[in-house]
Image (cartoon, rainbow, N blue to C red):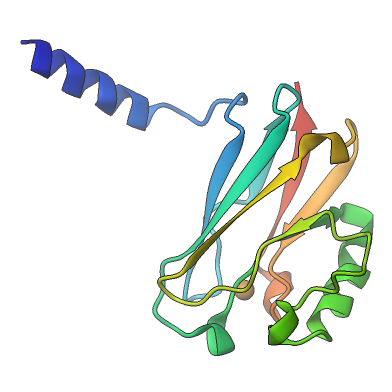
Length: 149
Ligand SMILES: [Cu+2]
């Protein structure tokens, strides 16, 4: 009986929606150049926020690599083209570019990466864009991130 209750509560937890107070999110990229998460709300109550990036496909990173890059929505275009020019060795990100607020490395099929950034970098009312800076991917692989109560 106790066992049954335990199993039920674990299932209930797994099925629960992502609460605003969760200070992490998992974003999964595919061989079809897509992501499963289009919007991320970061709660003000989080000091740090973690993005777990996964690649559920099987294609190598040279062909279908994905990363996760965060910038202000207004900086997204220049940050994206700047990143593309850096090459795979630099994870398609210019590390000297202060407009890059956070980024993961480029991963291929079956790989994963995780990054954590300070929520104090985010301002309320500001809209942020996260995207994959692998050449050509930004047009589809992007979403909106906001700081929320
Ligand atoms: Cu990508």
